[in-house]
Amino acid sequence: MKELFDNKHRIDLDPSQHNENTFDYYDRSARKDVSNVRKLLNEWFLNYPETEQFELKRRFKKTFTSSFYELFIYTLFKQQGFEITIHPDIPNTNKHPDFLLRKNDSEFYLEAKVARDKSKAEEALEKRINQLYDSLDKIKSPNFFLKIDELIIKTTNQPSTKQVINKIETEVAKHNFDTLTEQPQQSGFENMVKIIHDDDNLKLIVSLIPKTPTGGTIEGRAIRIFPLESFCGGSQESIKDSFTRKAKRYGELDKPYFICINAIGILGEGDFDVENALWGSLAWTWSTDPNNRDEKWGRGRDGIFLGKKGARCKNVSGVLVTKVREYNFATATYWFAKHPFSDNEANFELFDLAYYFVESGKILKYKGKTFGEILNIESTWLND
Image 1 (cartoon, rainbow, N blue to C red):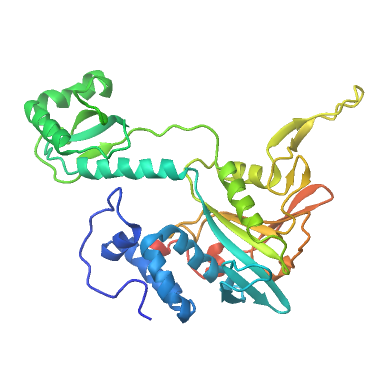
Image 2 (image 1 turned 30 degrees about the vertical axis):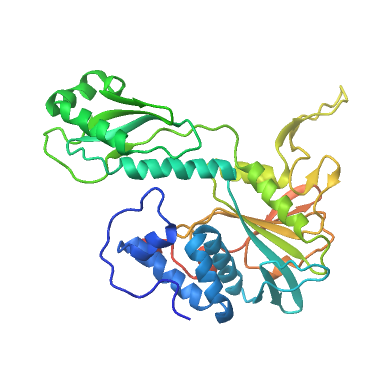
């Protein structure tokens, strides 16, 4: 099997487009950091079972993020000395988990899942918006950047941008560069010249921002500032939903079962969201005894291991929650937790990873290695 990315001469230094296929971008780019990612993924790919390489490469071209995560998880556990079988058979079902891992006399199943904060409908809308951004970035505006103040797609149809682009280019040509250069200094961006387009399919408001204080032209993408994306809440629900779906997928199993979740949505708050998902939401508790209130912080019964009705998903032995991408895994934080009520206990001493466990009602942590240490990759690898 050939490498994941072909060995060829590359000269393209342009950044990725908003809606560009990730594999295609990594395959065309000559940037040093992209080249380093490409080189490392090729090394990992060549160590993947040859009989599975064709299918994995096919999926990489269509679903880069989930395919990367499977290759990352395979490599991570392979580096810890595990023998790995891809898509093993399991009793009483025709479904196949991602991996069967073996080490010493122990075997266990492992499933890898990418968790996102957005629904399929929200992801589809995001792609439509990104398609608009890619079109608007081609606007000829030599002296001004565009600031997108508002963008609303009103229907399920993809808006045509030809009329919008013509309108913006016409309006841009009407404005004096030197006059607009003085405006941000005198009255701030709130009073910048705005161009408004509003039809049955699209509402778009953009502001003009001078590119340099001395005039002249700068080639490149037209859009410089995008609308802020607001949200409330965090990523803990997407982690819990992903865990529950995978936990129920195979029912009772004959071996320990681990679930790996890559929580890469934008809503996460690091430790806070993941720990709420694992152990339950933080809650202020107290005793009903008026003589001993015993007020303290505790955990609600809404985590992946313990719900209001008691222990949950006891067929699962443990969970690994990560926030890894193809460029940050050497330094990425992770949470590896032992299910405190599992019916399928596993030997966590087999792992080089740090892990959490519950003992006498307390959450404790056993020290282990970082991803970079396990994979023998320095934190500076991306730009070396």
